[in-house]
Length: 176
Image (cartoon, rainbow, N blue to C red; front, side, top):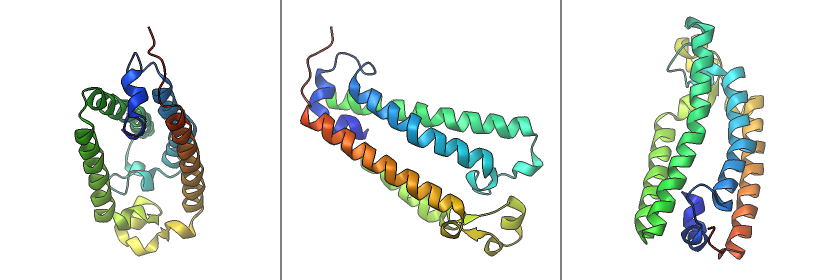
């Protein structure tokens, strides 16, 4: 929803919800930053990626892979749904509603992160977590903490540069 909010005028003038440079920008961020990181984390650290709610060791390998593919697919589905909702609200001149939905989503993610903080910040196996969460390694003392940090920094810089570029050239001719 960030793209339609930041580039509201361009989104209003774009001929199609998904065939425009704003959606392409969001897709590029998914393809280059979120999906590769999510795949790496899930397939190399499934216990942590499932936040110790499920034990991958007790599941069939095909089921673990299916959950991973489904989760990675949902990254794109939710991004596209958020973009479409934001675009629709912006085009209907309901930018305030889009801001409220964006803020509510961010708040829900923040509350979830606070409620699951110990699960998010400890890396290890499900069995270690179940026995004693303190037996796992803190995220920032583990390699994945740095991988996440570097990816987040790169994605953030790319996102800001992309949005700034779009914002400078916000008004585009409608696609016929």
